[in-house]
Image 1 (cartoon, rainbow, N blue to C red):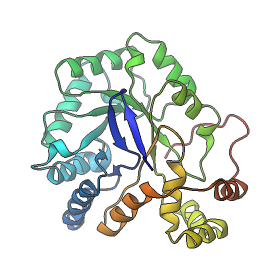
Image 2: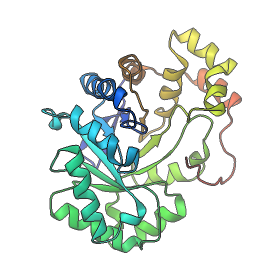
Image 3: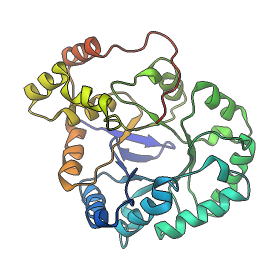
Image 4: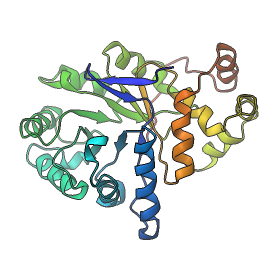
Length: 283
């Protein structure tokens, strides 16, 4: 079973990466967070996703420490605030991120969500950063179909390498139109919060009778089942946060889990796919 995703037609990545949202917020957790990211790399989870927003740069510092001496082992992704996405501001924001990450380049730089800066200006900023060698690729996050189509209609917009959006079993809206659009364009989708955000929704997923039953029958955890479900679709890469060694190993093992048609049918029955256009979920 080869669960790998192709970026820009040549870069192969595992369909599960590592998210860092909420990392860097507590100094007491730093050693464990660094160790978890390093363990993830050892397990083959080479994509690490972060953002200047996460702990206001604190997560980037954690990632920088984790990658010390092994930067080339990782496919490094960070994101820029929308108000920093202007032609000059984006370059300065990227340079700040690079300093925190202790690296000279990002493999992928994303506009975190759409703001008031015109898309054509953000595209020019991304192109400038590429020309300077500070980023190798760029993309977007939290773009619905209309936003994505508008972006792609701009000069240079077709260079967009990915769209990172919320996607998990209890939030399937992208399956109706956004995911097919991205698949048609061979644009990978990065699924953040693939296990759902902490709270009632996550509790409902992890305690759902159907999911618990299937997981037990397969000898896996519900978390692994949910990850395997997310990456069952072509061109989807899941980026769960894992701040413990146990969770990292569990996530990596999910790469090798396949779901039968019968299991998928049972899951669809419990969590039906969308039958019409839905607003893009964002957290």
